[in-house]
Image (cartoon, rainbow, N blue to C red; front, top):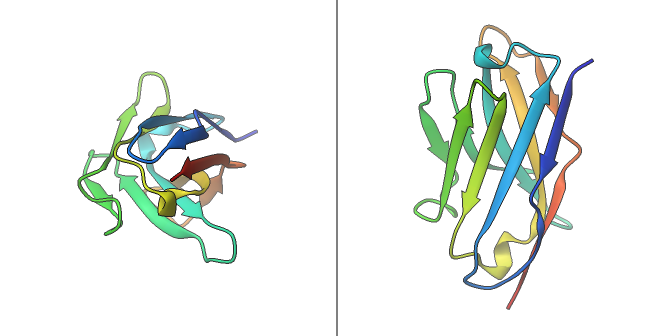
Length: 117
């Protein structure tokens, strides 16, 4: 059974930092591209950051320079360090795992991040 379990969300003041973590099980983690996406109320889910199996990274325009994604294949985890948080970063953050050779993908249940101004 595949599980992606996010942790680290919470309430933080504007300008603060949070670190999200996603622990994967039931997949051969090193063969999956990993990513973080978010969805704010009334908005579509959007890309936050992705990291490939070769550790290439990609970021949404709104988080470039503030967020950093990393992965630990030994622990099957992917982290998202979020700095200089803004109220517009408030959303539910979802972890995604996409198999590198196909479109097979899995999603976590999400973790709430709330940034107060």
